[in-house]
View 1 (tube, helix red, strand yellow):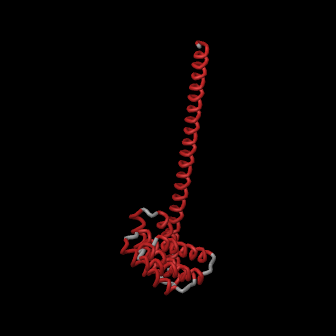
View 2 (cartoon, one colour):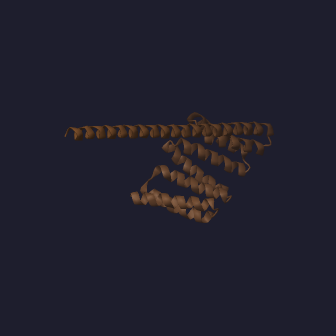
View 3 (cartoon, helix red, strand yellow):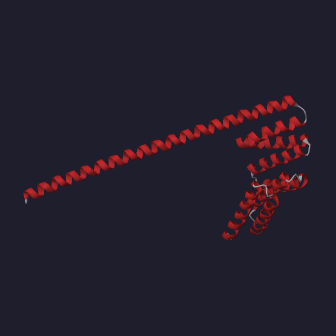
Length: 212
């Protein structure tokens, strides 16, 4: 079973590579193979992600109705699994498809649901993308001032996340540097202690020899 699970993950990852290379039919082939195997294993949590990946490909192929079918299927499983990240991301994807289908009101409805979850769970990266998609939806409705307001919120959050990430990296580097410095100091102390022990041993040895 472990081997089959590993094969299922590998097939999914190969599918992701083909999706990135815009080889969409090949990507679908690998995603479907992975999905078949995961269903046999009854791997509930990753089945939903796999279905979502298939939805992503159909969205990229501009087969929007098929994309929505897969997204809603994934959403249903994610809701049963109480997968908050998956739910909010899939609602965001559904909204994006509805914008492409020129249905911004449907998009806004799904974005509102996604935003509530992202806000409650503090999913800042997802929240950032939701704000950007709100902007796109209102732009589609020709409500430019609201679209601009959401775009400003998106930019502000993007900058905040960027600054926070940089601050965390600086802290990590500082911790790493200090840890290395402490390690070096400890090594120096150990070497000094070792030299003192050796010197003491030499002194004792010389005295011993002089006595005898």
